[in-house]
Length: 47
Image 1 (tube, one colour):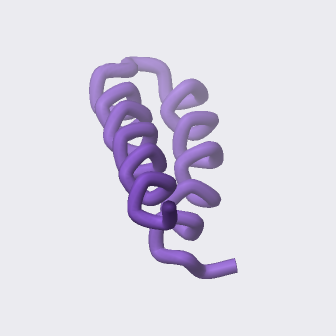
Image 2 (cartoon, one colour):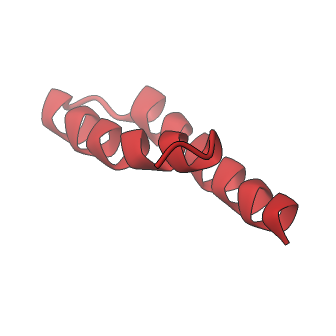
């Protein structure tokens, strides 16, 4: 079950990372980075 959770989290992290790279406005990039940080911590199982 943990592997499925980490897999889904990895997919979301990759999609948000792709969005950060494609976005031109700095404010949108910063917002996406703020969303990305907790997801990376969850992916690494750090609470």
